[in-house]
Length: 347
Image (tube, helix red, strand yellow):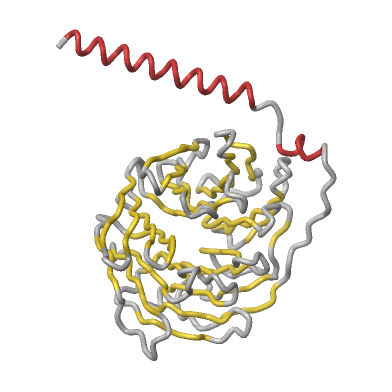
């Protein structure tokens, strides 16, 4: 028993030494800021859009929204127990789907064929609905395996979906069979958000353990773990080129992590912002990071700037917490959803 304990102690010492050397290596390569790197190049001033459409129709807090692949339609989920499919250009409601549970926390649009939507929440289920029918009353599939609430879901394609849960796991599903294909379980707290890479081979998850992890769907393994946040990570998103991720946290900061450097390369925060971030996404070019806040604001950050100054704020804003936001596939329009029951489209 003593020999075993000595081997365990020696292994722990070796692990600590490796952690220390990795930290020193990262610090040695962290020899500048994003602003320093940007000064060597000339960048045009970036314009940002104004309010173009307001979508009215929900009678409860809007908790989630997601664009379809055609960049015109979107789905929203609300505490009123409805999923609504919208035409974002005309503001028309295409379809309203009643839910079995009004405690919905997430929704997703399948972006290749645009014929499926999914949602989930405190019922621990991922419910998948087929669109295009005269009246959708029941889910075509109910995916059940999580032991906690469903916090986020994203379609990989028409046949597969990724879900995250309060049970600290993410699951890769076969939608047609309703079966689990892979479970990802390295997080030490509730997983709050997932986002797919442009290649669809990787996804990133953000958790209440204050880490963001990148996973390879093909191998089922974690390829990167990013630390730095001091509180729950509520939202994650991939940079448009797939080489970096953005995160938003309850510690009042958004951060940019580069997968090639395996390190944090920018921190978007300042002393005047004290509330948590609910949702983040990048502009189509990746120059701007949009972030929704608990204080009803949607702020814009210049990714090339690291001086802690907010680039701008969308006005006129919402009258309650900004709970969700997303940019469409063409990068032309941003949609924000709020507890004030409205969705707003900016371009």
